Length: 281
Image (cartoon, rainbow, N blue to C red; front, side, top):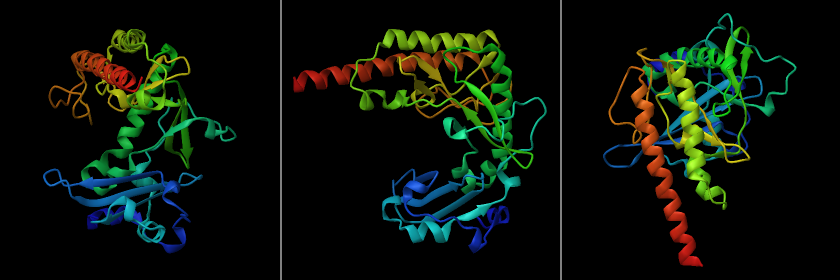
């Protein structure tokens, strides 16, 4: 871990959480060398019920080889100031007595904590996404994720409360044996994007990981971390494989290009499934 990053962590043994298995972690990810594919390090994070956050990493070890002791010994407490932005006036606040377990809580991307530049952006990225969702709230649309407000911790935004969905489009063909109506799915996605565009907003990161499906297979667009007004600068934008080029400014054509890619991706996934069904029939 970069030495300067330790200034953001308070390494106190009694503050470390009690981890019993890897399933207790909030995130667990391997970082690979882009040229050789070898594992450089495994990074992991944990957030407890009180929104206290920990981050850790072990160099040169695959996640499958990590022990519970490795996790416990390498988790370092992260200060609220490093990751949680101060509350902004006008944002909806989730009531303290609300059962937050019924929501999906979007938190800062703690795995970015092994990069000093990305770490510095975490609070700003979270509050900007909350502001976009707050702006969209009066213009509710069936194809856009439902936003319930912000989770507070001592005057800071510790997370964004969103509606929960069971299936992500990326895994729809593996997790659900039912056929997917691609035409209806794309119609729903386009309707959500057209709604954003009517408000002069672009999503800027449309891909199968950022689309959920409800119980009726209707698509719900997620992740508004890169959603900004046309022409506004972006802190982050696009996912490799789903963009034509790197970009740093919000634009309508980013979404239009992604829609074409999504349509082709869905057709290919459907075709693979039908071929597999034919071979086993």
